[in-house]
Length: 102
Image (cartoon, rainbow, N blue to C red; front, side, top):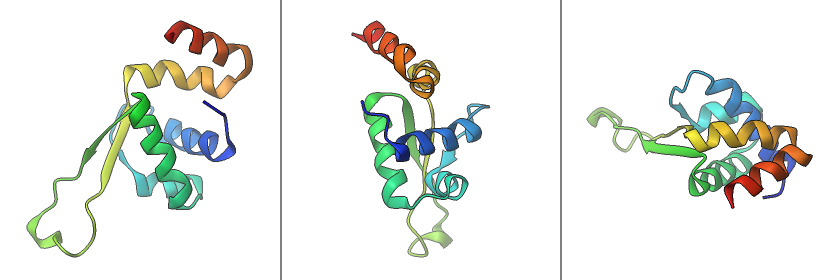
C-alpha cells in the first residue's frame, strides 16, 4: 500500500479520534482532518477492506428518516492498531510489518 498524503492525513485524524477505541463517524474524520469527503471516505473504505477498521451503520431514529443519510461509524481493529504505527513511521518499520503479515 502506498503512503499517499490523503491516506496519512486521514489516518492521523483517526489516530487522534480513536485512541480510546470509540466509534467515530466519517464526518468527524473529515472535520478533524480538513479534507474533503472524496478523499476521506475512499481511505476509510480501503482500510475496512484491509481489516484495519471495522464499520457499522448508525441506527437511525424514525424522525431522522429522509432527513439525512445514516452515518457510518468506524473504529480500529486489532490488526489496525498494529499496522498504523508502522504505517506512520514508514520505511523499514512499514516493510517489516508487511513482511510479518505475509
